[in-house]
Length: 346
Image (cartoon, rainbow, N blue to C red):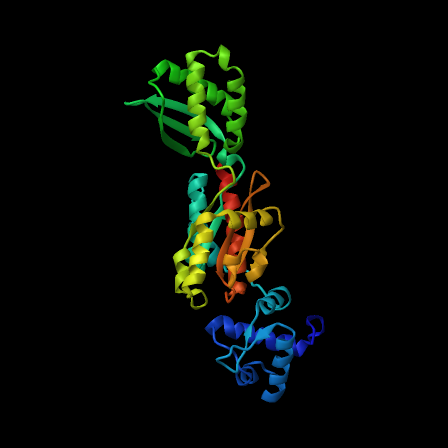
């Protein structure tokens, strides 16, 4: 039997089998299906259908049991063709909304969204840091400290304020620091921080010969504060320890690879980038992610918006044996609520 020729009865049995497996994580046998599938057929007929589904690559029989479990291809067929997603109840949406404070900064909202996803699903929630106005400069101030140190105060357009201590090559006067701050505020205002460093430093380096001591100070200040800005994006992750208690991810080596991927971030960011301009929910099952550490895992994502444009992606990471019917609407609604909260104060 090929996937394209699976009849309605076989599809129904596959759906019941997947739903059973999602609930208890154990291989499902023909007797269980004969009892719960609601079909007037014998266990022998069901065994034959299960064998056909196994031949089609949708089921596999673990060596320790006569029952069968879905393969990644089986989960994909289930999600694409058999899954019925029900909208969340009003009370559930209200709880998600309460987890996001519209008065918070962008950074705080990103953290809150990842926490909400983790708490509600009991898996890992991640939210990509936005790449639009949330990372634009509004104002920069410098305050002299002792021992060639300067306190840099960075004010962003989303109400976020960052303080950084800069170690300088010499002591700068308050006047020099004020002039440097004025120059950088004017040059950086409203600009994406991740793209500023090379442009501003190039402009100032070209005029180095005619620069006053104030401009020399500006070069050093700009080099240090802009050097800390991430170039390739970032994401906030919450609830990764939830994965340690899941049966499917109990293998130490598998967990080690997964947590290394969380720390290195590159592969996950590449995966999130694929979803940022996609419409609606995206589901990556096992090997589909292209990230080896995600073997045995599924990632459900949705993009969120700022100022009418896709700004980032949020999602849930869990085992392939996850409750897709429940997690999909949670991810979808959380993305909409985060978009609304970000746009409310931006």
